[in-house]
Image (tube, rainbow, N blue to C red; front, side):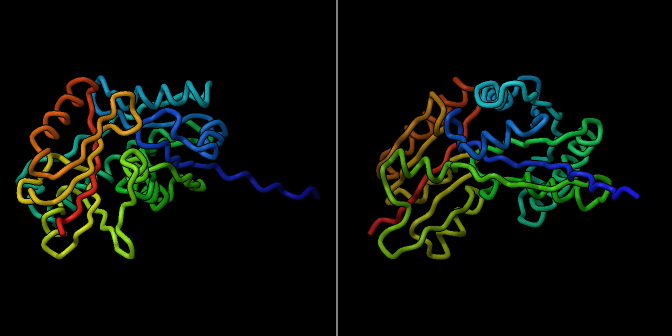
Length: 258
């Protein structure tokens, strides 16, 4: 009797693609894209510039790999739902569940290995791995998850400003704009801030800031200086990037004044 051959396991590759530049993806990341039958990306609205950038990335590094857009479920952003930490986490959990169901339908309809291009690195404030885990937990699909690290906005920020993110023997705290005030109140004096709805810096006028917007993109912008001196210009740069490119992703290092 012939031995039954083990069926090769389907692969879902979560691939960090860098903070915005088409050439920030690693060689390992390029190989992961090329080894996949197609890629998927969440589509937020009829004209999503970040989806277009992913298509450009594939055309440059993995021609022939199709990007399949999956309409992203609406997320509750009302202040009544997100004003508390418990409420915010509940809204995000509901959104992750809805997104995982949408992705699962696409994976069910389209067989083969799939790549999920992720901005920066999948380990830094990204929901992709949590969503993929939800799909696996339901047990309707079987696949192996592979993670390819990417160049994060933290790394690009440090490189562009030619700085080390922490002082000698010191520490650095990474947080979001939403949590910045409590991190500062807890005594952190060297903070990298990601995911900013705005720039909540009015009470930090004496701190020093190194800021980067749309890092790696052709229109990237850098600002550094004392917060009180540069904040109005920072906000103007941020709105200009949004108006010119249709999106803005920024990250910054804050250091408490001696």
